[in-house]
Image (cartoon, rainbow, N blue to C red; front, top):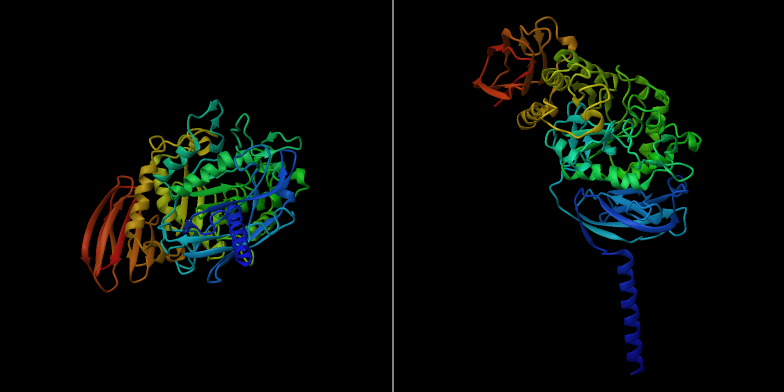
Amino acid sequence: MVKENKIHAVALILLITFLFAIEAFGNLAQKVSLYAVHEISFSGPKYGQLDSPAAKVSLLTEWRHESSHPSYKIYGFWDSDGKGGPSGNVFKVRFCPTKVGKWILVKTESNKQELNGQKQGYSIICTPSSHSGFWEVDPDAAHGRWYKRSDGSHPYIVGNTMYSFLSEHNGKGPTGGNIAADMRGNSRYFKKVRFSITSDRYPHPTDKPFLDNAGKPTDDGNFSHRPNPAWFHKRVDLAVQTAYDHELIADLILNGPDTEDSRSVLRAAENRGDCTALLKYIAARYGSYPNVWMCLSNEFDIKKPKYKPADIARFGREIRRFLPYPTPLSVHSRPRDWYRELNTDPSWNDHVKLQKKIKKLHTAADFLARNYRIGGANKPVIDDELAYEGKGDGWSEADVIEAHIGAFLGGGYGTTGHKPASKKGHYFHGNFKASEHKSADNLLWLRRVIDENITFWRISPVRDSDIRDTTAGIFRNVHQEFRAMQWPGREYVLGTNKAHKGIQARLPAGKWQIVLYDIINKKQELLDSSASGTLTIDAPDSRTVLFHFKKK
C-alpha cells in the first residue's frame, strides 16, 4: 500500500511538472502556417521610457527544423508590455518557418540572466500554406536580373511611394486616411510600397518613433538607439502586417527621406554615432516577414546629414549580420548611376536601387540596363523614383506608363508616386486614391499582362550596343527609341512609343503567336496565332505598346 502511494505521488509530481511546463511554454506543438510569422513572448527585466534596452540587451534564439536543416538565428527585441505601453518586461521573437514539419527553439542566449535559456525546447508544427514566401534573387533568371518567391513564382513588381504616411497627418492635420486602409488600397494596384519608419515631414503631434534622454517621444533620429515601442507597435507593425496579409511588399526606409530629424537615424549622435542598436532592432522586429524589404537610406548623399558610400556599405554589412532570412536590402541615392563603391564582396545589397525620374521608354530602358552592369551584372535593378504623377514634377499619366514600360524593357522594375505639388500628395502623406493616381489602373494592367503572358524571368534586354540605327535583335527597321527583350529562340518583346511602319520580325524556326498590348488604352489584339518566317508589323500611334512574340 505504501509502495502504491509512492507511485501515485511520483505520478502526481510528474503530472504537475508537465502542467507547469505547458503553462510556461504554451502549446508545445502549436500549428503555424508555412511562411507565417510566429511571435512568442519572453519575460525579462522590466524597462521604461528612461532606459535603452535596444542598445543594452541582447536576446538571440536559434530555431532548427526536426530534420536538422535549415536552422535560423533570430534576434529578439524589447516590446515594453507587449501592447505598446510605456514600460514592461516583455521581449519578443518573430520566427518564420520555411519548411513543413516540426521546428524547435534549441537555444536562447542573452546577456540578461532572466532571459538566458528561457523557452528552450519550445516547438511548433509548420503546416502547408499557399503563401509564396520570401523574395529572393533568382540566379537562373537572366543572370540574377529578376526576383522569385520561395515557391518559385516570379511576380512582376511595380511599386508606389508613401514616405510619411505612418503619421496619418499632413500639413493641415489628420489626412482622413489610415494606415491599414492605405496598405489595402495599394495592394489592389501595386506590388510594393516604400515608406519611412519615421513620420518625417508630417510628424504626428504626440506619437513619435524614438524616446529622448528624458523619456519623451521625439522625431529626432539621433535617438534611434531608443526606439519607442508605442510607435512601432501601433504604426509600423500595422503597416507591415496589413501588407503581409495582402501580399504587398513593405519597403522600409530606415533613414530619411527628407528632414534632418529623419535623416539622423543612421547618424545616431546621441549614441556616439553608433546606429547598431537600431539596425538590430529593425532586423529583429521585421526581418522575419517575407514581405519586408529594407532601404538603408533615401537619398543618402543629398541634404543634411549626408553619408558616404563607405558608410552605407558598412551599415549594410552590419544589418546583414542580424537578418536571418534573404531580406531584400539596398540604398537610394541622388539621381545618378549606382555608386561602384557600394559593390562589395560579399555583397551586402541584393538589388540596385536607383533614382531618376524619366518620361521616355528608351531612356528608362537604357538607364536600368546600364546600371544592371554597373551594379555587378548579377542583381535586380529598380528605379524607385521612376515617375511621380502630377503637377509636382510635371509628369502626366501617359508619362508614368511609358516610363514603366521602359523600366521593364531595361530588365528591371519601377516605382511611381502621386505628387500634385512639392512635398504634397500620396507620395508623402498617403491617403491613397486610385482615382487621383490615374496611372494606377494601367500599371496594374501592365503587371497582369506580364504575369499572365510573358516568361519575363527568362528574357534580357537586347544590349544597347546591339541597337544600331534600325536593328534590335530579330527586329529590323525599328525606330531608334524602340527597345526589345529576348529569350533567344523562345520569346521576344518589342516596346514602341510612337507610330512606325514596316517593322520586320525575322522569326526563328517554328510557329509563333504574336499579341499586341496597348497599356494606356488597356487593349490587346491577337495579330497572328501561327506566324513563321519574316513578318512585317506596324507600331500604332500610342506611347505604350508591347508586341509579344512567343513560340508555340
